[in-house]
Length: 279
Image 1: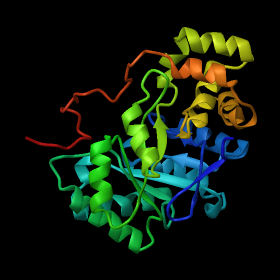
Image 2: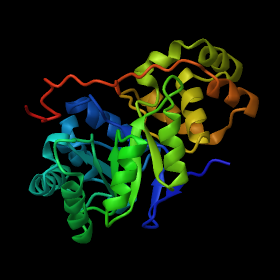
Image 3: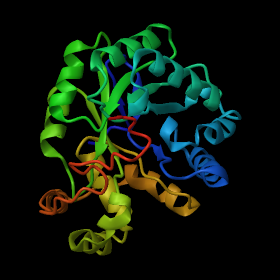
Image 4: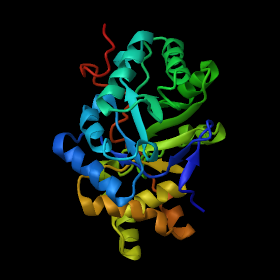
């Protein structure tokens, strides 16, 4: 049975479906978040690197803050101690809130001490500016290091996860250590819609490929963060809580042999300014 929320070490409840906001800005992200909240979403995922926190803050200002789960992330170029503190305070200001429910290290940066970064995250936690901390795009090894040295539990690892890229060793380690897995790009940025198995199941269940993929993910104990700017799709993505896949059909998706990342490739385009790892 799928739970509607995951309990974190702090006791806080993380909704299993959230509004993803990567690569949408201006009036588009405002519309997406507004439609999501109106449809019943209570979970919003953003990041300083998404460059849309101010717009999201404008929308949530007319809602009860305590009813919304709000996540943001610090860029890898800002993982020095003072930079983490400054980045968080800037995100809070842009979002118009006094705290974040969850604050994540967006990408690991091996050029900066992980201990230094986590010490800053601990300070933010102790000051009440963040209620939970986590990481994003960490391998099992990187996560185990973070867990070993952090004074605050690492509640979440947000990774690329979809039927073409399940990252089984990372997910298994997270489940073994009670770390919640969140799926970034849970729909493979729509590329997975073309998969034959997904297409067949969409026809069988008379549901969209997105519905099939998202339902499969939450049945695998994954929190999903689909992105959409279309009201019908936003509503449809939330309806995955109302039905279930037959176990045989679920296994068909598990058995898809494609191993194709959409963004988490072994190498990086180091010229990208966001990584901030200089020579």
